[in-house]
Length: 489
Ligand code: F6P
View 1 (cartoon, rainbow, N blue to C red):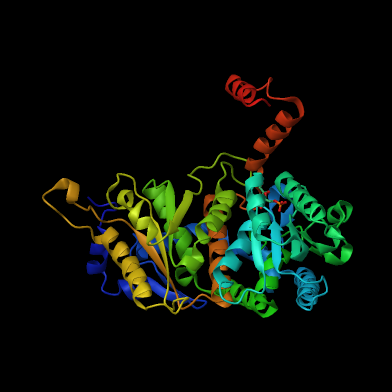
View 2: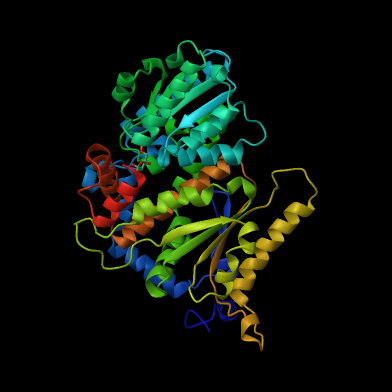
């Protein structure tokens, strides 16, 4: 059974140059698209479609800080944090980075007293980026122990409290809006915990990361410890701004600067490379092939490296909050499917849990394998060898399949995957990788025709939670009213 008109493995037989044509390096990262159904004709058709969708103009608007988020009437200026954007925005980003660096270095020098732990409260984009960065890069030389708390379930904070000394803890409140109810409640509870422990001047131990500094000031954070960022930097694109502060604090400023430099290298590639050799463009064209031509409703990302275990979660927000929409720029219903569901995990764990379906299920999930050549540890090299051989074997097995007379033991094959190979995990490479995903999401949005920078879909639930909190659930649908009664709300 083949998914496309030609089986994947046969594409190699038809094109002796397929490996060279569909695997190459961009901004220091090796991408292998050859085990997907893309071919020269699909690339040509995709490039023509990009032309029709005015891709070059959209990309110019993004790069020059013009309005691309039309429903909210603003630019999306995450690349300005990396040096590409409107002159003023780049200058502001630089100045805010300098302010952030000043605070990072002052804390390193002991300005806020002895600090051993950081409790970072934030959710969504105000959590996922810092968490990913520190988990990936901060395993060896972290200066502080970082606890990122997002869930409003008190169990999450309790766990952090159990591991921190309130007298040596810095509270970082990360919220673009500084109104997100989960974050504000968690922040208040950290202060209470410090007060109960007899910490003097708890408010002297808070740093706020926000695009609304006035709100942080009103909340009681000292002006000198408020690190603002621009309103035009979206939450899920914000780790380059002051939202990345915990990473800069834990890893050091040089690491943070390298992260920005890596992202800038990918920005240059995205802005300048020919579409047919442009990594975010090719990735997005492949995404659309699977969603539109093959009806795939999900895409799976498996990181064959423990240091990237937070990446699938990070990408879920980036891709699903950006391109999980039903209407286009003009508010008309989309003529094509939106982004698929992003999901995934780590290899080799996934192999012993969910890969059964990926190999033999009746639904197809295009896969993305991430592997790193240099191990992050000095244990027996058998570990890394086993990790990487499994990664290669899975991608190959999915594509080639294997026939057996026993149907239960037969592997249909023709299941597509992309492999992304990093030389090592360092700030430069990780910066380039994350920027690659951002631009891929942008190209997908241009192809779909939706605005990737708003997220109105999250508002209704928040509003209804407020309504229940204020006036109970008696007026809601019968199921909800009954559940609320049972809970006692
Ligand atoms: O509810 C969704 C959302 O607005 C995300 O887009 C955002 O990353 C997250 O909430 C947190 O928002 P804030 O940084 O304003 O607290």
